[in-house]
Image 1 (tube, helix red, strand yellow):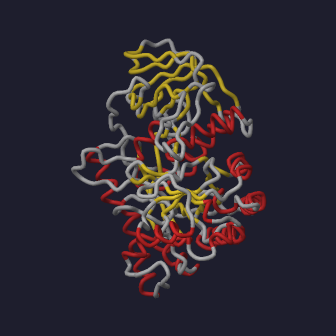
Image 2 (cartoon, helix red, strand yellow; image 1 turned 60 degrees about the vertical axis):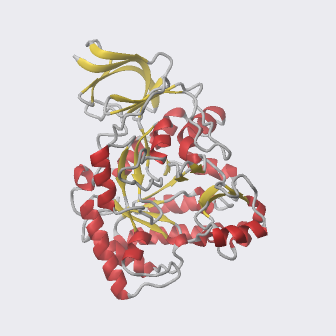
Image 3 (cartoon, helix red, strand yellow; image 1 turned 120 degrees about the vertical axis):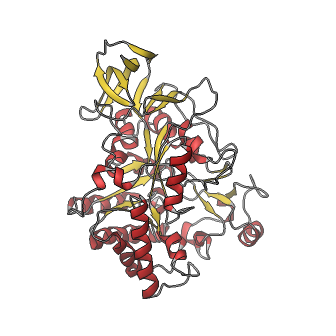
Amino acid sequence: MLDLKIRNGSVPDFEAGAMLAADIGVKDGMIVSVGRVEEAAKAEIDAEGLVVSPGFIDIHMHEETLVPGAPEPYDIARYMLAMGVTTAAAGNCGNTRQAVRDFLDFIDANGSPINYLTFAGHNSIRARAGVASPYEAATPAQIEAMAGLVAEDIEAGAIGLSFGLEYSPAVSFAEMIGAAGGAAGREILLSAHYRSDGPDGLSSVRELIALSEETGQAMQVSHLVSCTGFGDMRESLESLAAAKARGVDVLADSYPYDAFCTRIGSAVFDDGCFERWGKGFGAIRFLQEPLRGTTCDEASFRLAREEYPDSLVAAFVMNDDEAVMAIAHPLVIVASDGIYNRGFGHPRGAGAFPRVLGRYSRERGALSLVEALRKMTLLPASRLRLGRKGRIAVGCDADLVVFDPGRIVDTADYDSPTLPPLGIEAVLIGGRLALSPRGGPLPRLGRSIRREAIAGWSGGRKANA
C-alpha cells in the first residue's frame, strides 16, 4: 500500500515541455509511480485543477544564524517553506553565518523547515585567515591559510565556495584563485557576488567567467539583475551564452524585483554608488528600525551608515524590464537572494517564486508555466547535482508543491515582507505534509545535505561542460 496518492494533478513534463495529467504514488519518502495510479494509499490528496510540481529549489539565499536552545531558531527557512521552497543553498555572497560543520550539525540534530545545503563563504574564511578589513589586501600566507580553510569546509560538507567581491573591495583575482585552490583537485561549484554593478557590471561578469576558465570549476553568477539590470542585461546574457558555447560551465541566477537589499554599512554604499546608479538618496528605503519605512535622505544615510550599519535597506535602482529579461533567459535560474533580520527585510524572501509564477508567467507571459517551473526545480537541481530532486519521476524524492496556477501570486511587500503567497495548497518534504493552508505547527522535516551525500560531487574534477 502507498503512503500517499496525489490524484488528478497537472504535472510538468520538462522533456516534453508540457503539463500532463497524472497521479503520483509515494512510499517511504520517494515517488514510486506516476501516471494512472490504481494502488490504494493510506492518505490521498485530490489535486483536481491544481499543479503538482517538484519542490522549489533556491540556489541563492541567506540563512539564519542558528542559536542552540532558541525557542524558534529558524527565521527565513519558515518563509521559504511557505512559498514552496523545499531545498535551499546557504552560504552565498561570501558569507557563512556560522561554521559549515556547526550549521549542518545543528540541522541534523534539530531538523529544519526545509532541506539545506551550503557553500563555504570566502569573506568569512578571509576573516578567519586573519585579514582585518575588507579594504585590506591579503598576504600570500593568508591566501594559503584561506585555501586550507576552504579544504576544511569542503570536508565538512560544503558543496563549493562563494565569493562576495563587492563586499570586500581588496580581494584580488589572484586571491580568488588561491582560495579556490583549497578544493585540492576536487570538483566544486563556485558562486560569486560580482565586483561591481552598473557601468562596471559587464566587466564584473567577464571576470567571473575568467575565474571559471582559470580554475576549471563551474561558476554560478549571483543575482544578475542587481549586476547588469542598469541597461546592460542583454549584453551580459550574451557574454554568458558566448562563454557557455565555448565550453565554460557558467550559469546565473536572478530574482524578480527591481530593488536589491543589503546592509547599509556595507561597501556597496561607499562613495560613488549613487553616481554609478544614476540615482539619489531617495532610491533607498529603510527596512529596519529605527528608520523602518522611511525614504533615505543625505542626513539619514550618513546616520545609518555610522550608527546602524547592520540595518537592511532596499535600493530601487534596477530596471524592471531587465529583471524580466533575466528571469526569462534559458541560462538563468530563479532564486530569491532572500535575507531577513528577525523577520525584517526584502519581500523576495517570502515571495520570489510565486511572483515569477503569478506575475511574470501568468500575467505578463514572459515565460511559460513549464519553463518557469523548470527554472525553479530541474535547473537548480541539476546545477547542485541533486539527482533525486527537481523532477517528478519514479525514484525521485517526494518533495512536492501543490498550487493553484490561476491564483498563485506573492503578497509580501516592503511594508509586510514576510506575508505568505496566495494559491499554495500544500508543500511536502519526503512525502510528508510540511505545510498546509489549514495552518498549525510546522514540522521540521528538512535535513542537511552534505557534499559527500551527493553522488554528483563524489568524483574528481571534470572538464568544463
